[in-house]
Length: 468
Ligand code: FAD
Ligand code: NAI
Image (cartoon, rainbow, N blue to C red; front, side):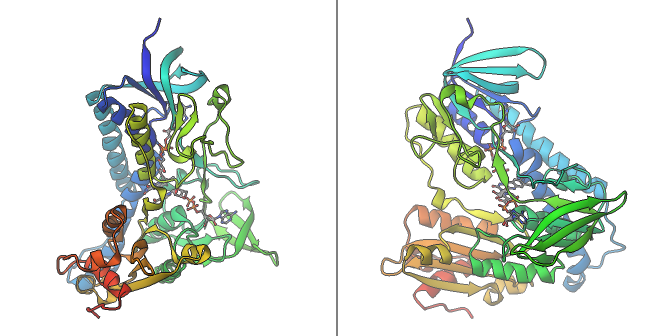
C-alpha cells in the first residue's frame, strides 16, 4: 500500500511550485508532478525569465548604440554576440529552475518527474519520465497545468521560421524582417528585443489599438513611443495566411473589417495572439471537472475549488495569466487545504510590460470606470517634469492615478515610463490598505526619485501638483 499524501500538485510552474512550497512549510505531506524535466513552468523556462534576460541584454545593447555617446561614454566598435546573449539567458533560467529544486528539498516537497493524470478522487497516475507508472494516493489534488500558446487556424508553427512565444526566445540569427501577429504583451516585448538587435519589425494587430487590457491613454502613448523606436504597426488588420518559399515568408493580410488584401515580406513570423489553458489528457472528467469554451477550468466556489478535494490554480483557471497571480493562487490553496484562510483579489494584481519605457497598471482603468458608471477624479504627472527622469534623460511617459469621487479611495493607477514596473508596487500596497490618493500625496518620497512622479500624480487628484 502506497503512502497517502495530503496534497499532490500536477504542474511545477509558479502556481504549482509555490503551492508545494507553502504546503511543505505548513507541515503537509506534498508531492509535485512535473513533466517538463525542469521546475518553474512556462515562467522560468520559456516565459518571464528568458524574455526578461533578452530584454535586459538587448536594452543595454541598444543603449550602447544610441545613448552612451550622449552620456559621454565612448565605446569601440559595437558588436552583437547573439550566441553569448542566448547563453546568459540560459544561465539565468538554469540557476532559477535549480533554485526551486533546492526549495523543494528544503521544504520536504517530493518532486515526481513525469506526466500526471487524474484517475478519480484522490488518485493521480504518473507516467514516470524514467519509465513505468506510479499511482499517488492523496487527500487533495491541485491542478496547476498552466497554459500553452493559442494558434491561428491554417498557420502551422514550425518553431524555426513561424514561431510561437517559445521559438521567439531562441532565434538562431537576427531576422532581417520580422512580423509579429498580436500587439499584446508578448508582441511588444519580443518586438522590442528583436528591433533593438536590428530587425525591421511589423506588428499586425486585429484590433484598432495595441495592448487591449491597458488604459487607452497609456496604450496610445506606448504606440507613439514604440513607433519612434522603429516598430511599425498594422492595426485593425488580420492575417489570412502565410506562404512559405525556401528563403522567404509572405504574410497575407487584410483589414479586419474586410477590404483589399495586402502582403508583408518576412524572414520570421512570431505568433503571439494569446495563450489558452492546458489540460490535455489530464483526466479532469474523472472528478466531474469541466472547462468553459476557451478551456478555462471551471471552479464551483468562484475561487479555486473544482470538486471535493480537487483544486486548480494559475493560468488554467479564471483571472489574469500572470506568474505572480499563479503564485498567489498556489499559496492561497495550500493555506485553504491546511485549514487556514486563503484569498486573492484579482483587482489588485499588477500588470507590467517590460519594454522601454515600461508600462504598468493595477486596478481599474478609465474605460472600465466609465463603463461601470463610477465617478472618479484623475491626477496625472509627466516624467518630463520629474527631476530624476530629466537627469537620466529618460523623460517619456506619465503616471496617472484614478480616485473615487467623494471618498478619494484609489481605484487604479496607470503608468508608462522607465522603472514603472517597480514603482507600481507602491500603489498595490496602498490599494491593499484601501488608501486614499491623499495618503500617497502626504507620504514623503525621496528626492530625486522617479517615485516622486507617483506622489505628484496623487497630489494632482486634489489639484495641488507642485513640480512642473
Ligand atoms: P505554467 O507556468 O504554465 O506551469 C505549468 C506546468 O505544468 C508546466 O511546466 C507544464 O509542463 C506542467 N504540466 C502541464 N500538464 C502536466 C501534466 N499533466 N503532468 C505534469 N506536468 C504538467 N507573467 C508574468 O507575470 N510576468 C512576465 O514577465 C511574464 N512573461 C511571460 C513571457 C512569455 C514569453 C510567456 C509565454 C509568458 C509570460 N508570463 C509572464 C506568463 C507566465 O509565464 C504565466 O502566467 C505563468 O507561468 C503561469 O504559471 P502556472 O503555474 O499557472 O503555469
Ligand atoms: P495578449 O493577450 O497579451 O495579446 C494578444 C494580442 O493579439 C491582442 O492584442 C489581441 O487583440 C491580438 N490578436 C488576437 N487574435 C489575433 C489575430 N487573429 N490577428 C491579430 N491579432 C490578434 O497575448 P500574448 O501577447 O500572446 O501573451 C499571452 C499572455 O502571456 C499575456 O496575456 C500575459 O498574460 C502573459 N504574458 C505576460 C507578460 C508580462 O507580464 N510582462 C509578458 C508576456 C506574456
